Length: 233
Image (cartoon, rainbow, N blue to C red; front, side, top):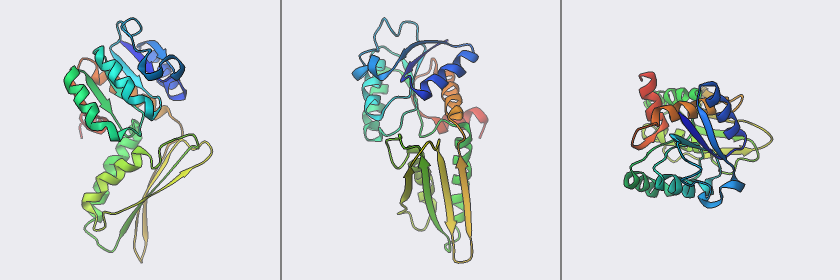
């Protein structure tokens, strides 16, 4: 199996290390300077590639998808902040016949957290005394705020809450890998659910797992859907 990297920063390098340990061939490794507007995604550079993993910048996602789709390359999209283009991307995937997995968060632990939050929201929604809140913290270089993960958490909570008009508190500072807090507050007490990433390793492991799953498949998939299938939820 051959994996291409679209984005070769910290996440790209970590994906490479995990993929190599699992027996993948990793090439090409295209950083922003090598791939302006998807220009590095060519028939020559992508020869033999089974799946491309995209961890770049929000503005690069659509050009990268368009270029990969023209070559019939399946994709794992780990970058967030491109939701405004979702309908267009779905159409590209349908028209080209490729397979694509996107996700607000590829961390295996966070996807377990998604299940916990979804269940908790259903339960807490039955008790009107509690108000829900969401906060997230990330490193200062993260461009999108709120995070895609926080928005995804909010989407799965809203149908179950008496007050669906929740806002998200966002902090960008230092080197925080990622912290997401879900709270339910009443006059009597507060219930807190928290996921705190220690490093980016969980994201990379999930991305490689997604790449193995999407190889040879067609269609547009959310990683949460794939994760649930893989673990049998």
